[in-house]
Length: 76
Image (tube, rainbow, N blue to C red; front, side):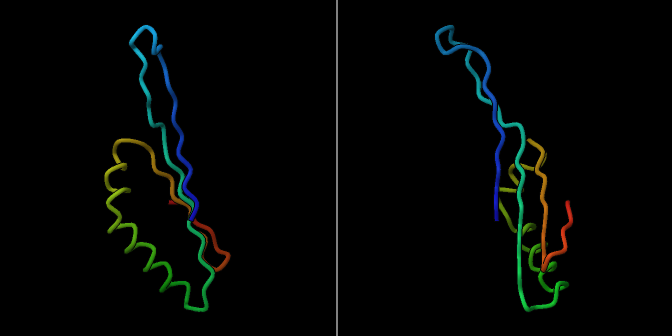
């Protein structure tokens, strides 16, 4: 799994108006397994539904998820 976060800042610390912002997250899930791809897809979907962090972020910022299971890539 590779997670990349994108942030930016604006304003000035010296002026007292500095702010930090989260722009988006990109998540790449890569699985190579002897198990059937359909079972791995089900596992990834279950894990994503149970992920507290993804739930907290979704709706606040863009979360782009790319899955590669046994060489087949899909973007959610």
